Length: 346
Image (cartoon, rainbow, N blue to C red; front, top):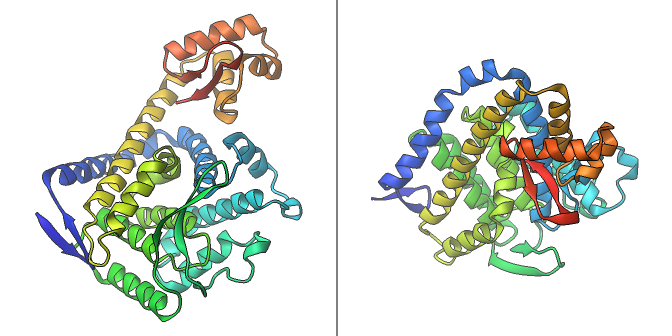
């Protein structure tokens, strides 16, 4: 059944309703999970933060690995943020931290969105001239690839009055629409924000931060403990393809494909979060040595058995045997063969 929401058309069929219901059923049980898994959640939040910061900045062209991001965030020294990748990573981290700590007090207004953009671009010298202000020049949604090439996905709203009007109307709709399901509102707000592309740069990163903000404000607190950004990075070609497919119909486009992608991403990370919580439960039964290996791999994804042996002072043959057992228990994942074999957590 086709519905009109804001300026869009969306087909609310049984499949879409089923996914939304599944997400909401999980959310209904979250309070009890939160009480029971307090310590585990602290660890998961720390891991999710690194994954989110790394993934979201890499989607836009950064080359820092999760391990490099983790090292950078452990000892932030703003006087040494000389390269653009480091500046973007620390800016994203500070914006994500602001949202996590203060989401209840951040109303959805133009000023607050501009302030989040200002925090996001705070350390980027190249962006000082436009941070916190709407764009002065036309821009486009571009896909950035590891080899440095770019591809225009679609053109965006013209700079000036058209962008200002579009953002004002979007925010008014979001705040006054009390009938549309919060998840649908979040998906459509994110899509329209990307379509308008209101800032000169940083729109992709800010759109993902705003998604987390809207989900948190709607009561989906579990989003802090798993990385939506990492899920999108893993589906980057699909992410850009879906955006482009919907954009070709603009204006008054049908955004069912985007909504389906967005909800499916949420459903997938919910399942991953449950799996991680189950793993944490199993971890409590591990020996101290086994647990130290799992924690080391969590903090150093992509590490090899020789690194683990050296850092934890455990004989390498013993480490290899324990790694095989931990893989069998589905507590860690093995990647590659031979000298290139490395490990990560699920």
